[in-house]
Image 1 (cartoon, one colour):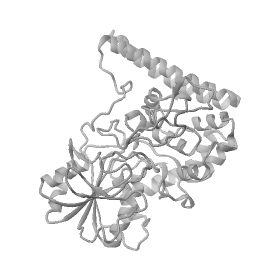
Image 2 (cartoon, rainbow, N blue to C red; image 1 turned 90 degrees about the vertical axis):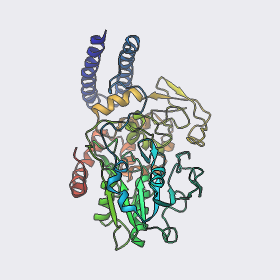
Image 3 (cartoon, rainbow, N blue to C red; image 1 turned 180 degrees about the vertical axis):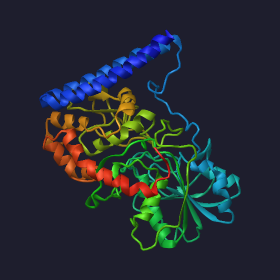
Image 4 (tube, helix red, strand yellow; image 1 turned 30 degrees about the vertical axis):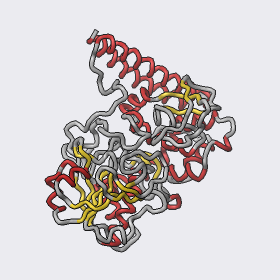
Length: 445
């Protein structure tokens, strides 16, 4: 039976490759109405084959490979993240008054970074909290308030809401700011924008900033439209692609080097790099980076499904499958049904709250997607726009354009452009960006 399972996996990989090639060919040559059918068949076929393989393994107690992994997190493996390299920065913190930008991902092994610093008798005076809060218990977009950490008694100052940038007064008695957050490699994920504001404040006050770098789970590719500065917002501040293929440490160097701060001074910056990491590595995160990205699959799907935030669709917020599914009450296709509800710390008033949605569950497709697609998957957006009964309400124009970084993507979808047509426009700007980022890269592919 063990050899049968292995053969099934090999057969699946071959089938998936052939299915992808076939689907691409037919979607290019068949009438538009058949594209949705091919997409549906591909998802259903993949889900069926995963079910066969997983069932065989369960029956015989086989271990599960990465390709067919269940919903869970992995550790970083042999990667040593910046925070763990205490020999590279602890000595620099002696006799320094320290502010820490952190959340629940900011750990050295299983111990929180703040607890580790205090355990080393270092002078931590302030905690800055971003979206989702210091302990990661605030829902998406929910206001994060100032307070006090009950475990350490340290003051927590919110940098999410009206106060996005530390004030000169908040940095007045600070010698060094430590920034340690797990990013997911997508331009509209707000930790990057928050880092920009912190760099801006440190540049203005000439306060030292140490970025403890962490791997990018979507770092193995670069894709999507480059942000047009007219659409600059908290969900996109820099002229970079939607999926930039960089770590926050690399981006900090680029922000300084490209003069993207609104000051003549650069931020006094040090980046503590990861050891034993390359961007081609496949790994999962030991701690979910935010409440609605709880699994490996949701993180892989996020670059594509995150755009749905600017549409009349649900991505599963308010369910136990956030960013692993999509649907809407009006959708006539799909075999997956879900009803979004408020979930404390995860979803507050999610789209279609209390209404049954029909759509697709994608966590199996995500594993296939991870292996074969190094791109933002536009086909779902195109399919759903065509099937929406009231196309005038499908896009939340302003917000979708901010997420996309321009208005062209929305207009192209509305004009009936194919994903190939749209992606053609990205090719030259993406190549130019890859050249521009080269001096700032720390890690190889």
